[in-house]
Image (cartoon, rainbow, N blue to C red; front, side, top):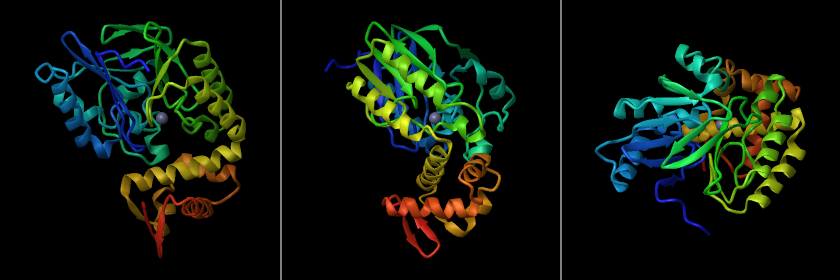
Length: 305
Ligand SMILES: [Zn+2]
């Protein structure tokens, strides 16, 4: 197993915060993705520590890049911008929404997730080439999980930064399908794109880095074949979003959830897709999560185990 090039650090986080990739530059460092907002202080401390380890404590972070703008991938952008005043590149299609801070376009309102406002100074587009840590990376559009998501591929080192398009076991929720847009076909095309690239190591948005790329692709294609049904996708999304909320808050009151989430259109759309009221859909998802050992109940109080 070839180790990562010395100018690249892979920082594995949990499922609430995305992983980070840190590139050592001649005159600073570039960070890709920043984790969830409620963990921003921890992320800043982590980045400070890694910068010190790679000899960039003084220069600090000189550039920030986001693969996509889900709140678990850009939640510490604002805190890192305060700390390092680093210019930030986002996917081209999201650039204007960030500049206007359009929380509907950025889907934070739709998912009832939090993300502190940050600034974007430039963008990356499909087909761009960018030098990171002295290596040339090509930018690939990879819609499916998110319509504007990007991946980064370094042919020379056979590395892929796959965001939530491919994990060792699966991939992220196919969000566009929850609002009646196409996503399954795009996800299939994105997986086919990965299969067509020369990749020996994947640095995913969540979970461990991995080398068994053909096997991971096989698992992902098989999973897509199973979930490529709007109702099934909606059921998965309800469970995943409630588990995410539980990871964020560690505990909540089941009786107040429907009220708290009434404005979250991703939740109400998912409930509608399976023909349930939001109340009933939440109750169903909590029962499923409990059955899978993903939560613990005491009366109406729900705990992350
Ligand atoms: Zn995502």
